[in-house]
Length: 216
Image 1 (cartoon, rainbow, N blue to C red):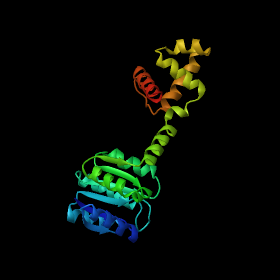
Image 2 (cartoon, rainbow, N blue to C red):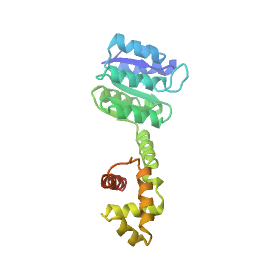
Image 3 (tube, rainbow, N blue to C red):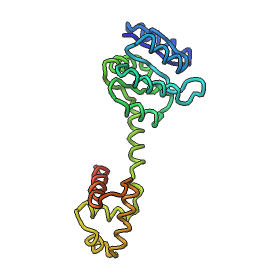
C-alpha cells in the first residue's frame, strides 16, 4: 500500500513511517504542512493519506481542510485523520462528505500499534475507522443541537397533539386555550423547526415528522 503522511511533529511522523514500513506499506511522501500534502498526493497518487487535523501555519484546520479538498479531487483516496482532541465540527464535515474510506482517530490511539495499523488497512480498503470518543461526542452534539429542544413546554404539547392529527380547534380545546393562541404556537413551532412559509398542511406534516424523528 502506498501512503502519504502529513504530520508536522517530527517524532510522531518518523514513528508512523517506521510502523507502516514494518507492516509492509510504502510511505511515498511525508509532508510537514497542508500545501506539501496536496502536492504529494497529486504527485504520488497514494492509496491513503494519514493527516493531522492541525498543521502550520495557523495550527487550526489546515490539515482537515486539505483532506476535504483531496476527497473531492480524488474520490478514491482513503483518508485517515489524526487529532489530539475531538474536533466535532471537523469530524462531522469529514464524515458527512462520504464515510467510505474515511477514518478519524485520536492520536492517543496510535500507542496501540496493532489497532492503529488495522485501522489504516480498513480505511484503505474502503471501510471506516472512527474513534469511539469521536462517535460519543458527535452523538452528544446531535442531541444538544436538536431544534425540538428550543420549543417551550406548551409548544411541545401542541406539537404532540398535531402528531395525533388534531386540528388547531381540537388542540385549543385540549389545552383549554383560544384557537388564536394555538395558531401563535404553531407559527412559532414552524419557525423554530426551520420550516419556511408554504402550504399549511404540508408544514404540519413536516413538523410532525421532525417530532417523530426526535423521539426515536
